[in-house]
Length: 130
Image (cartoon, rainbow, N blue to C red; front, side, top):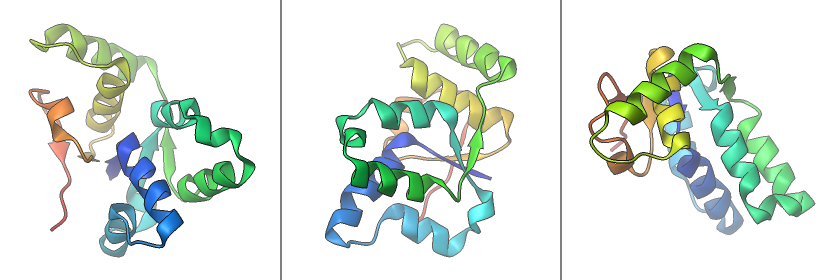
């Protein structure tokens, strides 16, 4: 399973306006959509943006995430996210810790535009495409 970081969806939404190919489109060509997932924390992050006030943009967002499996924020994910935040030698955003934990708990690979946010997290694997 490939878990998408929030920035992959944001990139997709921005590029979709211009008709450009996105990383999400490229990933969908090599991985079945059933194997793509998004943390419910990412859904919250996406709705934090003002663009969701626009009905058409919200519909584009909903259409983009509809085929994805939405991973819940469970006790197990929360517990691991807390340990990640505690054990890293530098601060990490709550959302990033939760997304990393969801990826690890679900045995997935994280697909992100910014691996730097997740550096040093044990057992976290990344998905990359050429």
